[in-house]
Image (cartoon, rainbow, N blue to C red; front, side):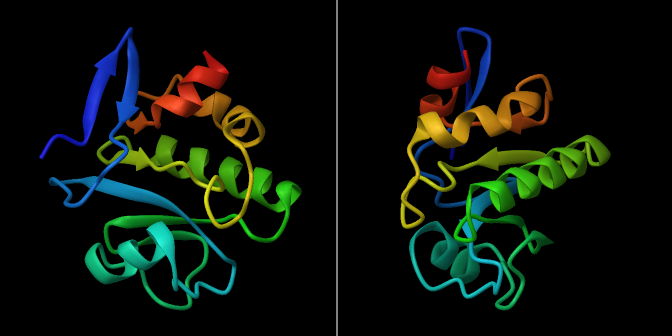
Length: 134
């Protein structure tokens, strides 16, 4: 299992996370109702303890980010996530390509929302986000 790598000084989360190490948190896109029925949300619920009915925040070894309620809502949720990551330096957050699947956003639309997470040593993001935010 190798969920992280350092590429050109950037903390990169694997595109395929099937198991987690100690203190690793799977960050996935959800809906605010926490109905984890598809994609990474389904996987988070079945394998990493994401609670049904919790659409934002930490549960199990996951962090849910609501992506289906519009970009302004997602922007607010990402700010909450970044605050959580700052408050929990003991955890390693593995961000998936949230919003770029079922929600229908592009990496160019979502990645800039994570710009403030780029400096946090405990946040790893997908390469496609790094490609956008540099």
